[in-house]
Image (cartoon, rainbow, N blue to C red):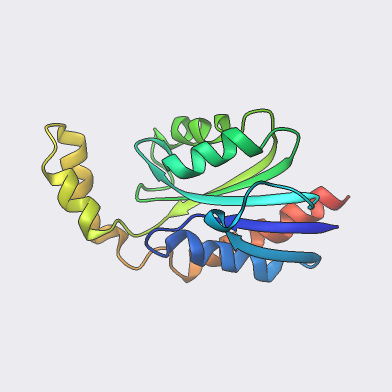
Length: 166
Protein backbone atom coordinates (compact mmCIF):
# COMPACT_ATOMS: atom_id res chain seq x y z
CA UNK A 1 0.00 0.00 0.00
CA UNK A 2 1.30 3.46 -0.93
CA UNK A 3 0.39 6.49 1.18
CA UNK A 4 0.87 10.19 0.49
CA UNK A 5 0.71 12.79 3.24
CA UNK A 6 0.16 16.14 1.53
CA UNK A 7 -0.25 19.39 3.37
CA UNK A 8 -0.55 23.14 3.12
CA UNK A 9 0.91 25.09 6.02
CA UNK A 10 1.35 28.84 6.30
CA UNK A 11 2.52 29.15 9.90
CA UNK A 12 3.83 25.65 10.59
CA UNK A 13 0.78 24.35 12.50
CA UNK A 14 -0.43 21.97 9.80
CA UNK A 15 3.12 20.90 8.94
CA UNK A 16 3.61 19.73 12.55
CA UNK A 17 0.45 17.63 12.32
CA UNK A 18 1.48 16.28 8.89
CA UNK A 19 4.85 15.19 10.26
CA UNK A 20 3.23 13.51 13.28
CA UNK A 21 0.84 11.60 11.01
CA UNK A 22 3.62 10.68 8.59
CA UNK A 23 5.81 9.20 11.33
CA UNK A 24 3.03 6.84 12.41
CA UNK A 25 2.27 5.35 9.00
CA UNK A 26 3.84 1.93 8.60
CA UNK A 27 3.64 1.58 4.82
CA UNK A 28 5.33 2.80 1.66
CA UNK A 29 4.88 6.53 2.20
CA UNK A 30 5.93 10.01 1.25
CA UNK A 31 5.21 13.50 2.50
CA UNK A 32 4.93 16.61 0.32
CA UNK A 33 3.63 20.15 0.47
CA UNK A 34 0.50 20.64 -1.65
CA UNK A 35 2.31 23.26 -3.71
CA UNK A 36 4.78 20.55 -4.83
CA UNK A 37 1.99 18.41 -6.31
CA UNK A 38 0.30 18.53 -9.70
CA UNK A 39 -2.42 16.17 -8.50
CA UNK A 40 -3.13 13.02 -6.55
CA UNK A 41 -1.77 10.04 -8.43
CA UNK A 42 0.12 6.85 -7.71
CA UNK A 43 -1.02 6.20 -4.14
CA UNK A 44 -3.75 4.17 -2.50
CA UNK A 45 -4.60 6.60 0.28
CA UNK A 46 -4.09 10.35 0.60
CA UNK A 47 -3.85 12.23 3.87
CA UNK A 48 -4.49 15.88 2.93
CA UNK A 49 -4.03 18.64 5.48
CA UNK A 50 -4.59 22.37 5.52
CA UNK A 51 -5.58 25.26 7.78
CA UNK A 52 -9.16 26.40 8.07
CA UNK A 53 -9.80 29.93 6.80
CA UNK A 54 -13.13 31.75 6.81
CA UNK A 55 -15.09 28.71 8.05
CA UNK A 56 -13.74 26.28 5.44
CA UNK A 57 -10.55 25.09 3.81
CA UNK A 58 -7.86 27.60 2.90
CA UNK A 59 -8.46 28.72 -0.68
CA UNK A 60 -5.48 26.90 -2.23
CA UNK A 61 -6.44 23.65 -0.48
CA UNK A 62 -10.07 24.04 -1.54
CA UNK A 63 -9.09 24.49 -5.19
CA UNK A 64 -6.66 21.55 -4.98
CA UNK A 65 -9.31 19.23 -3.51
CA UNK A 66 -11.98 20.36 -5.97
CA UNK A 67 -9.65 19.56 -8.86
CA UNK A 68 -7.99 16.35 -7.66
CA UNK A 69 -10.07 14.48 -5.04
CA UNK A 70 -12.49 12.70 -7.37
CA UNK A 71 -12.17 8.94 -7.18
CA UNK A 72 -9.54 9.03 -4.43
CA UNK A 73 -9.59 7.71 -0.87
CA UNK A 74 -8.81 10.75 1.24
CA UNK A 75 -8.23 11.45 4.92
CA UNK A 76 -8.41 15.10 5.90
CA UNK A 77 -6.48 16.74 8.71
CA UNK A 78 -7.25 20.34 9.53
CA UNK A 79 -5.87 22.96 11.88
CA UNK A 80 -7.82 25.96 13.12
CA UNK A 81 -7.70 28.51 15.89
CA UNK A 82 -11.04 27.53 17.44
CA UNK A 83 -11.64 25.29 20.41
CA UNK A 84 -12.22 21.71 19.21
CA UNK A 85 -15.56 21.59 21.04
CA UNK A 86 -16.92 24.77 19.46
CA UNK A 87 -20.56 24.42 18.42
CA UNK A 88 -19.77 25.68 14.92
CA UNK A 89 -16.74 23.50 14.20
CA UNK A 90 -18.74 20.56 12.81
CA UNK A 91 -20.37 22.84 10.23
CA UNK A 92 -16.97 24.23 9.24
CA UNK A 93 -15.50 20.72 8.99
CA UNK A 94 -18.43 19.84 6.71
CA UNK A 95 -17.37 22.72 4.46
CA UNK A 96 -13.89 21.22 4.34
CA UNK A 97 -15.18 17.73 3.50
CA UNK A 98 -17.43 19.18 0.79
CA UNK A 99 -14.36 20.55 -1.02
CA UNK A 100 -13.23 16.96 -1.74
CA UNK A 101 -15.68 16.76 -4.65
CA UNK A 102 -16.16 13.17 -5.79
CA UNK A 103 -13.58 11.86 -3.33
CA UNK A 104 -14.14 9.19 -0.71
CA UNK A 105 -13.40 11.00 2.56
CA UNK A 106 -12.48 8.18 4.92
CA UNK A 107 -12.14 10.29 8.06
CA UNK A 108 -11.27 13.76 9.34
CA UNK A 109 -8.91 14.89 12.08
CA UNK A 110 -8.87 18.45 13.38
CA UNK A 111 -7.12 20.30 16.12
CA UNK A 112 -6.40 23.76 17.35
CA UNK A 113 -3.38 25.55 15.98
CA UNK A 114 -1.86 28.86 16.92
CA UNK A 115 -3.64 31.92 15.57
CA UNK A 116 -0.97 34.04 13.93
CA UNK A 117 -0.45 37.55 15.21
CA UNK A 118 -1.02 38.91 11.70
CA UNK A 119 -4.43 37.24 11.40
CA UNK A 120 -5.38 38.32 14.92
CA UNK A 121 -4.56 41.94 14.06
CA UNK A 122 -6.70 41.69 10.93
CA UNK A 123 -9.61 40.19 12.90
CA UNK A 124 -9.42 42.98 15.49
CA UNK A 125 -10.29 45.47 12.73
CA UNK A 126 -13.45 43.60 11.74
CA UNK A 127 -16.94 45.03 12.17
CA UNK A 128 -18.05 41.56 13.30
CA UNK A 129 -17.91 41.27 17.12
CA UNK A 130 -17.31 37.49 16.87
CA UNK A 131 -14.18 38.08 14.77
CA UNK A 132 -12.91 40.61 17.29
CA UNK A 133 -13.61 38.16 20.12
CA UNK A 134 -11.61 35.43 18.36
CA UNK A 135 -8.71 37.81 17.90
CA UNK A 136 -8.77 38.64 21.60
CA UNK A 137 -8.56 34.92 22.44
CA UNK A 138 -5.27 34.52 20.54
CA UNK A 139 -3.33 33.94 23.75
CA UNK A 140 -5.31 30.71 24.28
CA UNK A 141 -3.94 29.36 21.00
CA UNK A 142 -0.26 30.06 21.65
CA UNK A 143 1.88 26.94 21.41
CA UNK A 144 -0.75 24.94 19.57
CA UNK A 145 -0.74 22.28 18.37
CA UNK A 146 0.83 21.11 21.61
CA UNK A 147 2.28 17.69 22.42
CA UNK A 148 -1.13 16.29 23.41
CA UNK A 149 -2.73 17.35 20.14
CA UNK A 150 0.17 15.93 18.13
CA UNK A 151 -0.19 12.66 20.03
CA UNK A 152 -3.91 12.65 19.10
CA UNK A 153 -2.83 13.07 15.46
CA UNK A 154 -0.47 10.09 15.75
CA UNK A 155 -3.20 7.92 17.31
CA UNK A 156 -5.59 9.06 14.57
CA UNK A 157 -3.07 8.02 11.89
CA UNK A 158 -2.54 4.57 13.45
CA UNK A 159 -6.28 4.01 13.85
CA UNK A 160 -7.02 5.18 10.32
CA UNK A 161 -4.40 2.86 8.85
CA UNK A 162 -5.80 -0.11 10.80
CA UNK A 163 -9.32 0.71 9.63
CA UNK A 164 -8.28 1.29 6.01
CA UNK A 165 -6.14 -1.82 5.66
CA UNK A 166 -8.53 -4.22 7.11
